[in-house]
Every structure is written in structure tokens, then in C-alpha cells.
Length: 288
Image (cartoon, rainbow, N blue to C red; front, side, top):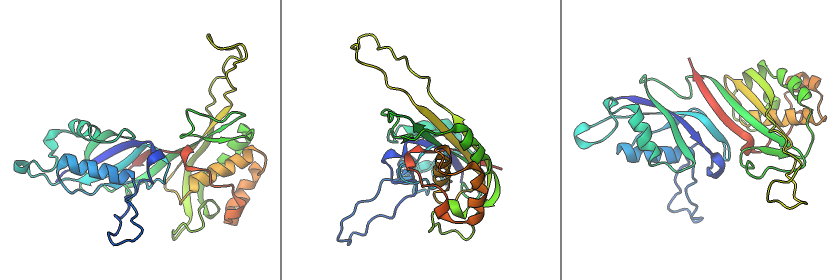
């Protein structure tokens, strides 16, 4: 019974998060429909290709609108060769990736597949995860990237944000950076890395492009900052609240030196806002 580990990328825009939702009760008078989730789409595709009722388990339960470059999922197959059921190891993982990608919708892609130990657990075995949150600030909101960045009109000070980000690193009680109804028994988490990078595109020329009228100008590209956070695990909405807090530091509403006291307080009201999901992306998951 081979167990397969999948590395999955997806555009979370049109998904109601990763986690599969229970099918609606046929007797439900509201006649609600099953929500489209990444886990549901991937699991359905794996079942179609393998002709087997496998269960796909994912490492991170990303929310609606959140993207992933390196989500990890796993399933176990029980091949029955004479019936064409399952995926025996001798068929190869490259062939499995091609077979799944040929069936998946355009907003999901299997990046890699490998055979792993039978006890591989994508959730419990994860040693470190990294997320990024992208903020664009400036006088013109982004058009082409609007599904993948959060735009703010405020001017942000990169140096202040970097100073505040450094104060997030370490094993701390992050109750102030979690949604109040997080449902966890402990709010202590370890952050290995928290950095803010300048990813601003080069400013375009103020001159009109060929074929454009004399009064036509390319708008200012503004500034783009990528907040990169890695840790052993995260509370619900924790990265989006960290990003919101660093934005408040960047605009001068919170001082960099206040981060330690905010963490110490455990008071959600003292931290910044929970930024929208579209700027968040799961980059990778590392295992021991």
C-alpha cells in the first residue's frame, strides 16, 4: 500500500479554503450547495484517476482566498492490478503528476509527487511552514495583481516595519495575534523568521509609450513589500494579523518598540487589523 506525498500550488481566489466541507443534507430546506474547496477538488481528481476512494490530507487549512505555492498533501493507495484500481509504485510518480494535472482545473497544479513512509503525516510531521504576505502601497491600486496583493493608500516606512518584524522572532505567547475564537489550548508558538522585503517594481518612465496620446501617462508603480514569516505552527489568522500590525507600524500608528508589550499583553485589541486573505500565500512546508 504505497503512500504518496503531493506538493500542490493553487490560486485560492475561487476556493472556499483548503478544507473539504461536508455535503449538504438533502433534507436541508435552504438547498445550499457544496462549497468548492481545494481539498475537495484534489481528492475528487485523485479518486477519478486512481478509481479508488482515497482520502487526501493536507498540511495547512488555508482560508478562502489564500493561495499556496507549496501546500503538502498525502494519500494512501491500495492497488488492485487486475481491476485497474489504485496507483502501484512501478507506474512512477512523474506519470501520476501528469495524470492528475490533466484532470485538475486551471487554478490547481500538482508540482511534485513522491512515495513516502506509511506513517507520513502532513500535519503532525510538519517541522516548519513559511507564509508570505504582500502589501502594495501607493496612489494607484493594482489591477493585474489585485487577487494576490493587498493595497493600501498609506505610505509605509520599510525600516520601521523591519525593526518591528525582528521583535516577532522567538518562542512567545501570540494570543494578541490570534483571532479571539481560535479554539487552541495554547497560544504559544515559535517564529523562526519574520522579515519584510522590498519587492517594489521599477518605476516606469513618465513618458508616454509609443502609440499613446500626449496626455497619457503610465501610473506610478508605488511600493511593494513582502512580509515573510516562518514558524513551527500558526494560530488562526496569525500571519494576517502580524501583517496588519506591521502595516500599522509602517504608517506610524504603532511604534516598533511597542511590539514586545503587545505580545506581553495578550490583548488582541492592541495588535493591528486582520488583513484580507488575498495577500497571503503558503510558500512551503518542511519536514524532519
